[in-house]
Length: 123
Image 1 (cartoon, rainbow, N blue to C red):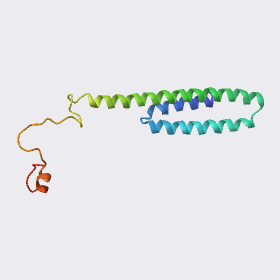
Image 2: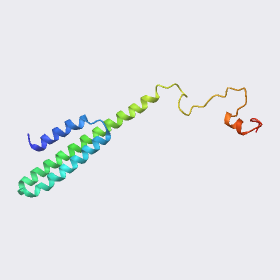
Image 3: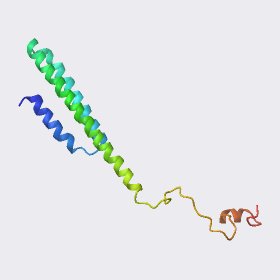
C-alpha cells in the first residue's frame, strides 16, 4: 500500500473517533496543511512521477474532503436529534414561556409593589 493510501486509511480511522464538530474541523485543517506540504514536495520529482503523484494527491484530497463532509453531517444530525429529543419529553405548554393561568381572588399586585404603594395595590 502506498504512503498516500496509508495516510487515507489512518485519516479515515481517526475521523470516526472524533466526537465534536470542532475536532473534525481541526482535523480538516491538519489534512489541508499536510496536502499542501505534499504538493510542495512535488517540485523535487521528475515530470512523469510528479504527474502521477499529483493525480494521486488530488484523489486523496478529494476523498478526505468527502469523508470530512460526511462526518460533519453525521455529527450535526446527531446534535439536532438530541436537541429535538429534549423537547419531546415535556407536556404541551410546559416550556419556559408557557402562559401562567390566572387563579383569581385576591389582588393582583406583587408584594414589592404593595410595599411601594402605601395604600395597597389599588392603582
